Image (cartoon, rainbow, N blue to C red; front, side):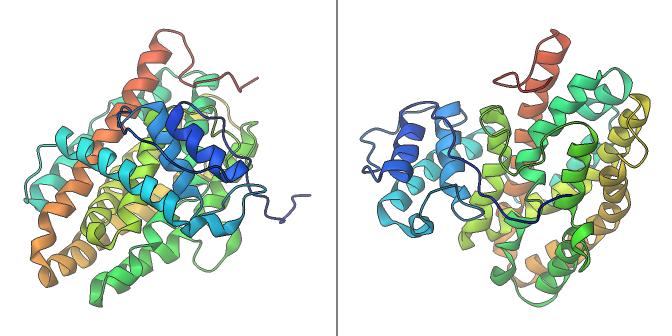
Length: 330
């Protein structure tokens, strides 16, 4: 019998001075002070430190006082890390304000029969599929939560339509149909631990960056356009990949019903894509056309960070190695 008691995850193991400072302040109350901010923007230390700060706005951590969520010193440190991360993202992207072109590029890339989902469908082994689920658990166990931050920052049809999409993501009023719940069931079906945050110490920075981007865009009103651009890009790219992953599960002999999480996304996100393009992005830009560059930022950042993650996974798997930081699968 599955317990419904909510248990916060433990604090992660530090990966450098930044993350050590954040973990130390949350565990011991030590001052969160860093004199220099010279960490790799996409590296293990900064990404874990940023993720830990953001997690205070979600489930928090075991034995960590909820009051730390709004502690001024920790927020100042987080703001410094955010600037480094966002500046690095912008540097990596072509930019521009042609939203239509940016979304068409996402569509074209999503329909290419390449990448992680195609590899898993055609060549992947069971352990590789399970590793993929470990990576994705960092987001999918809180699926759609980061996007909820943008709701009060929108208005009119853009708000109404985004809420309609979120309603589906959260199960249409049925707790057992929430996408996060479906993913937890998928983890159980594949022999993984569905506990929230269970695999945080195992996943690398490239995985954390994909989730940190969502939190960064969602928690800042000034980046509401970027969050909308990200959400649109994610919904556009999901159905083709979900179809391939459902086929991978079938080829690898997963138990019947294990593919429900992916088949749900094939059907739902095909509709969500159109709603986001027309009613969310379209209405937002009709009211605030000056946000076009931010919408492009969100779409391009999503593609760029997903490409970096895909490179990590495929590079390791083709070499016969684990893509995780630590061996957690048996």
